[in-house]
Image 1 (cartoon, rainbow, N blue to C red):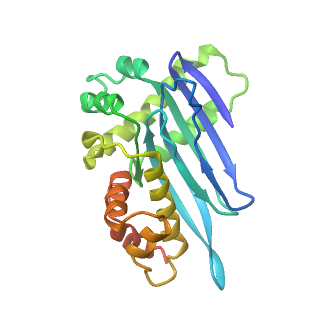
Image 2: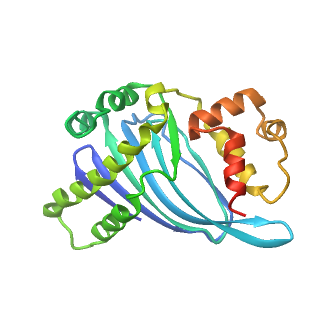
Length: 244
């Protein structure tokens, strides 16, 4: 793990993971400590998940997640998966100074999103230039001899990646809609996504069965899933089955 405070209210965290056993991660916030940081995370992950009576399947996942403070995010990982996460931790004050209309055409919508309640959205396979920009960030943050004089260049590279995200994230209306769910709803959506992946090689078990397993109603699960991912559960299943 690497981390750097680039400016007051703006941090870059890089996490490289090599999963040795199946695990679930969940972000945690101390209730008695005020959290003011928003997280914009880009990840490139090659993950494996088990298939009954067959060799594990390896899939490449590239995604962005934009999360507000006090939002608990659950993620599932399988043994043998490897990947990199780049998280920008930003305060609202820093965002108001740097997410200006000169840099971002949707700056008002971004700032409105930051003013909302807890929440999180995920985008899959957007921002085609993000991979190359992430490589530049890797080289910069891994430089153990870097000092404060290197921060302006690191900020410039970071802003390129952030701009790449915002230039592609308004293809749907989720930032504009600014819908907030409960932490338990986010956990249920993550668990439903895990169930979908785990059963891709089998006939679809049905949304009702998935909803029952995560202890919620089918209607609520379908709505929350689309809020988080921007597309329906059926679309997600159909698209992922093309990987086989």
